[in-house]
Length: 99
Length: 99
DNA sequence: AAGATATATCGGCTTTTTCCGATATTCCAA
DNA sequence: TTGGAATATCGGAAAAAGCCGATATATCTT
Image 1 (cartoon, each protein chain N blue to C red):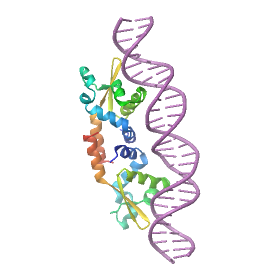
Image 2: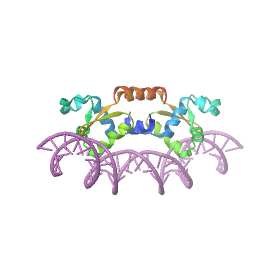
Image 3: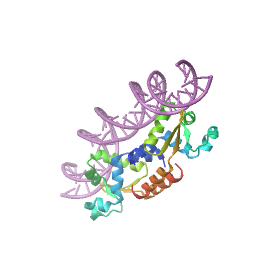
Image 4: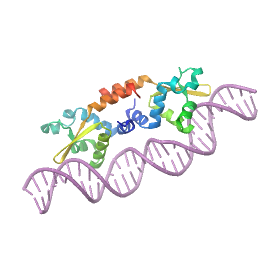
């Protein structure tokens, strides 16, 4: 758990926005409803909603994953990204106890 | 409370170290014991301990203050910096509820 | 008033981040 | 097996962050 890496991942408006969307995917990505959300939301949906290029979104998601804040699941040609709530709980605890 | 600014302030090893020192100033800055720690620790002490230049430390403390993570008190020729524990509590809460 | 001390600010060089377009890879479907 | 669709990676230009030395400002002392 690299603290600096986590905080770097969080210090960008677009990445915070993505994390916020992923907190309630049913609401923010209704077009994916048929597939269910167990594995998260795929890159393309986030790309469309964000207004950033596909490559940027893919890189941002990778950086969130390196920080441990999301997990990814490949399914066919899609990669689904999902929040790692344990990581947020741990971070919250870290801030109130250690940092 | 600018989230991006807060996380940027936290995404640096030296600044995290400073915050850690300020969590227990009696222990980390015993040489300042006579003055008491009600107002925090002055820039020079942090400068000495950090190995960074005075200007860098001053800038880092300013950035922590802009983020709301520390408060500063000028007393004579010294500026004392002190953790703002309310901000950390609020941040911890923010992470577990909002982000 | 003049020097000493503590801190802040400025200019600049280097490294990192931001974000893009182009291209590569992976997987599916006809 | 060929084309298309989704994602990842690469190369790069611009902006920001990391740090520094030099200098400015503020305060205290004599």
